[in-house]
Amino acid sequence: MALVKAENIGNQIQGMDSLPLFRQIGLMIALAATVALAVAIVLWVKEPSYRMLYGSLTDQEMLEITTSLDQAGIRYDINTSTNAVLVDAERVHDARMRLAGIGLPKGSGTGYELLDKDQGFGTSQFIETARYQRAIEGELSKTISSLNNIQSARVHLAIPKQSAFVRNRKKASASVMLSLYQGRMVSDDQANSIAHLVASSVPSLEMEDVTVVDQNGRLLTRTDGSSEMGQSSTQFDYRKKLEEYYIKRIEELLEPIVGVGKAKAQVVTDLDFTVTEQTHESYNPDLPSIRSEQTVEEQTSALGMLGGVPGAVSNQPPGAGVINGEEGENAPGGASNNSSRIVRNYELDRTISHTKHQTGKIKRISAAVVIDNKAGTGEEGSIPLTEDEMDRINGLVKEAIGFNPARGDSINVINAPFQVLPEPEPLPDTPLLEQPWLWDVVKQVIGLAVVLFVIFGVLKPALKNLAEKGESAREQQSAQAGEMAIEGPSQAMAALAAPVSSYDQTLESAKAVAQQEPQRVAQVVKDWVENDG
Image (cartoon, rainbow, N blue to C red; front, side, top):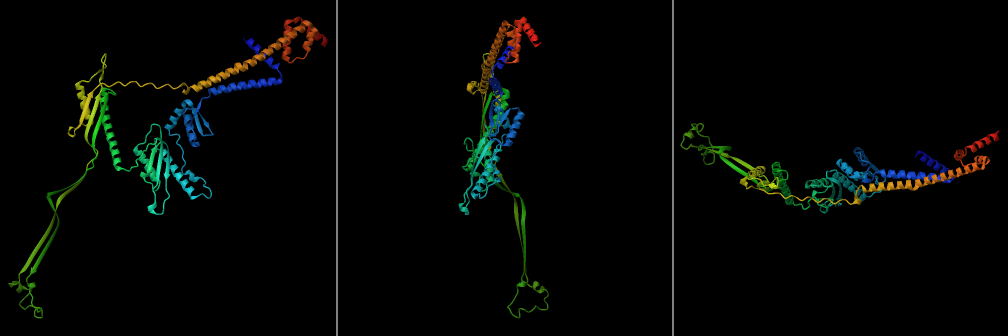
């Protein structure tokens, strides 16, 4: 086998040598291009199919994403023209989940960076105001996008031009559009927080004038301003949470006994949200105390009240026998009047109490519990619970909800077999054309077909043609050598002395003549020696 291959290679080389120079160069170029094409096709088949992961990324985001992909061992490619990152098509979802877990890409918005740019000479006041408003919108969008559950956000501000007159001033308004992650939601409290954030960042903007919607067009903020509706919604949420709390307590208490999924409960609570305030004032008459006391004493003398006719006689001093009014006091007309008065104010013990009763007080609880039958053996598929088991379960339910007959609580526990849910229908198979592995198989088949065509359609015929030409050239040379041997030494010597195309052909011809007619070859060599002296 090795001799045959060596002979074929020799024939191909000899056939190659028999061609003109230009044809040899053209054939070598064609063979090199064919081999290069085959190698390129093989590399193309081995190269994985890439799909776009994220596009229009900044350099910082691209650096963070590629670093994370390197750590995860995910192959990627970068398209510098679009700043896009491409990854293996089979791992594109895995890559997105990994990057979402670490908060990439963060997204970039236009904020106060606009103010850093050169505004040029002669920029109007309108352009400066519009640019500043756009910068505020970009900063608010970036701030809101940094919150959890929010993938991106856009903020639109409507700030009217204020008038110098107060009565003609208009209020500003704003709208926020949120793009949430798949399967995420924004609660009412979060929507109100976003509205508060926007209202606090813009002058003359009230929270009621901020509208927040999601990517599905669902309104997340209430614009009616009705406090009663807000209170009703809060009360409903509180009632719902309380009922879910009792349901969870009942099911967690019964499932270890009857089995997981074999106890279903529903609870209805009647709550009193009436706001009641009471003020009470009481007095204790047994504990009086003096708050204030006032004493007044008066003394009046009759002598001081004597007098006469105004004049000189009445103004004369008393006689010599009267000293310090003693004579007047002993006299019948010298009586005096003394009086005293005391005013006391008493304060009783007084108590003032202000009571505000609790809202959301439980007025009544109603609970309904259904217990599945026990699993049976043999022909009996299920076994009902006994009366003792039902009584124990009934007692457990009462303890779980804090049963109080004084307020009218009620429970109803029954035992009934649960209906077996039908098995869900299997999902439809993915069409063949949408299978992710189909393109890889097509690439491999196309690559294999092209390589086989290059081998068997180009290389093999070309090599076969060269081998046939080499073999025909060898046969022709052998025939010429035989003829020269038959014609005689002079003709053989002339044939050997004649110019040939190459040294290899001369060597092959000499070998052929030596094998066929060794005696004549010896004679030719003898003649060469004699002629050369």
